[in-house]
Image (cartoon, rainbow, N blue to C red):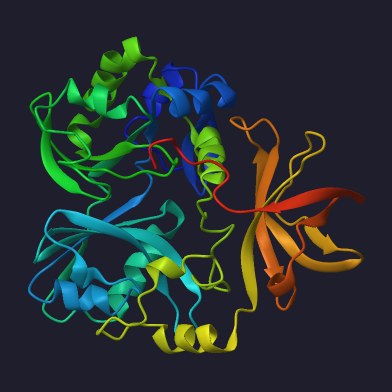
Length: 369
C-alpha cells in the first residue's frame, strides 16, 4: 500500500529530506541534521510541514453545545478568535486524542487533531450526535505549516500587514490574515515550546506560502525542520505525545494535564464521572520527568524505571537533549510509588542500571515565559 503524501512532498525531496513512513504518511524526519534543525528553532526559526494532521470544522447553532459534551476543557470561556488545548475522552476517562479547538465565530469552530487519529476522531465525534450542527473534514484541501522560534513573528511579519505582537495576538489566538495577498487562517500555537504560528493554507497555494516563508526567513537563519527535531523540541518542553504519554489507558489527570480538565464546568462531558472519581480516590499512575546525569545513553519508550529492586514505572519518551546536553525522559510511575517518590531512581538500559534524577517538567522553558 502506497504512503499518503502532503502537497509538499516533492519540495521536501528537493531539499534533500530523509523521508520515513510516519503513520502511513511519507514525511521528512530530517533535512540535514536533527541537531541543526533543533538549534534553529530554539535560537532562530524553523518551518514544519504538518499537513498530515486533521482539520475539522463544526458549524451551526449547536456547535458549542456539541463540542462541550465531548471535551473536558471549558469552551464556553472562549471568545471569538480564541482557542485552547483539550482532549477527547472515553467514558472511563482514557484519552482518545489530544487536540486544539478554536472558536472562529459562535457558530463556527475548528478542531485540530493528530495525524494518526484523523479518521477515528472524526468518527468518534460524529457518532455522538451534534444536534443542529454539522461536522466537516477540511484536511483533504487544507495544509498546515508551523513557523516556530524566536524569529517567527519577525519573519511572518514581512509577509503580512497583521499586527503579530503578543499584546495584539495572544497565545491560542486565531486570525484570518493575508500572507503575500493569499488568504490564510493562522493561530498563535505550536508544539515546540517556542513562540510561533500555525498556518492553515489551501492546498492550491500551500507550496507558494512554504517557498515564500523559506525565502523571506533565509536572512534570519530559518531552516526547514523534520519530525525528528519536532520530537526532541516537544520533549524538552515537556509536551505529551499521543501514543507515548497519552492513550486510551491514560487519563488527562495522570498525564499532568489537570489544568485542562474543568470538572466544575456546567456542561456534562464524556468521561466526567470517571475523572471526578479518579480525583477523589487517587491516580493509578502519574507522569514524571527525569534526567540521566551520567553518560549520553538516551532512554527509550518501554524501558523500566526502578526504585531499588522494585519496578515502579516505565519510560514513554526519551532523547539526548540537544539544548541541555544530557539525556532526558518522561514516563509513568505507578501508585502508590509516585506519592513518596525519591529524587533518584534507576533505569534499566539493556540489562544495566543507570541512575536517573526526577525533575520538574518542563525540562526547557523559553526566557519570556
